[in-house]
Length: 189
Length: 130
Image (cartoon, rainbow over all chains, first blue to last red; front, side, top):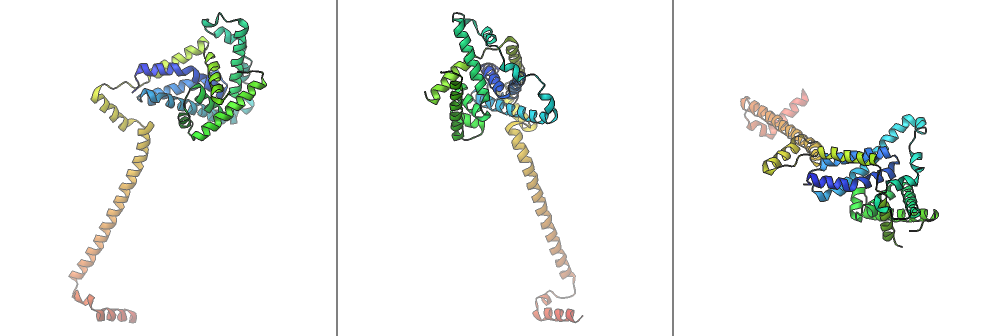
């Protein structure tokens, strides 16, 4: 059984990546925060008694389910508020974010770096996040879990509820699409 | 550059963007603390384990226990229903046999008469005539 401190350390280690993943998926920071909070509560209430090594897979699965639940709720809501949703603020603001804001948020260890380099790095990050958000949902899920969360193919397949072959296909397509999109925007890694 | 190397570079860059503004960081911290507060208390010793187990069996309708309960209860009710129908049918059959036996034993006609083929033919022809 995971102790309280183990659970706390685990949540602290994954919460920001989970938040970013949710933002890529739903493109709404407030909704993403709600999703991560729901996922944390569900993990703690229902699976807090499970061994610590089982927590990562469970948490990823809960986050993916919470994202799907959010889309389902949005679908139902949009049936009633289709005309109003176009007036609501949200996506546009995030996409027009000033890279300098990210620079201000960066920690102090970067201070010796030249401002031009900092700006370039922030812009590259911004573009990668935008292109990741544009990928098809299943491709993004597979790619992010394999290469950001560092799950292996079998673990990713379990979280996504599909075969290992599908995971490899999604990852490969995501990597090629992302590389092509970055190249088109003049970014070489 | 292969897929794995590309993925590693993307991870490296994405990890640099994990810093959040103070409001979001505080919100995540509050969510984490709320989640930890809702965690079930850790059991101490065998008695506590037994208590948790009993609690799971009796009252928890979520997770695997809930799933097994939701599956087991209807199956058990179905089996009990089948058992009740089978017992009722057996009782009915026994009652019918008892009835026939009682009529045979209390009737004036000797039992051997029912085994006599000639007597059966006599009953049939008589029934046909009537």
